[in-house]
Image 1 (cartoon, rainbow, N blue to C red):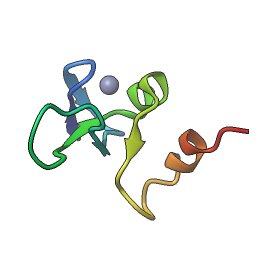
Image 2: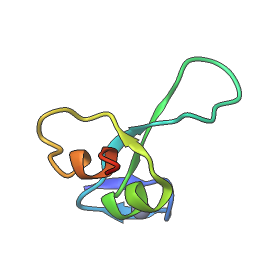
Image 3: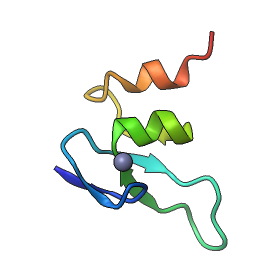
Length: 60
Ligand SMILES: [Zn+2]
């Protein structure tokens, strides 16, 4: 359970994602649920455990 920064609520399937649009400083990581990942085309940072991530990154 983590807080999704996109729909501003807790989500059981939230994964850490990389923020592309940043104003300053090193990239910070925030959490987003898989639904928000797909909708906003976010890139999950989690490796291995986050199997659904491959579904998002593939664009065929
Ligand atoms: Zn969300």
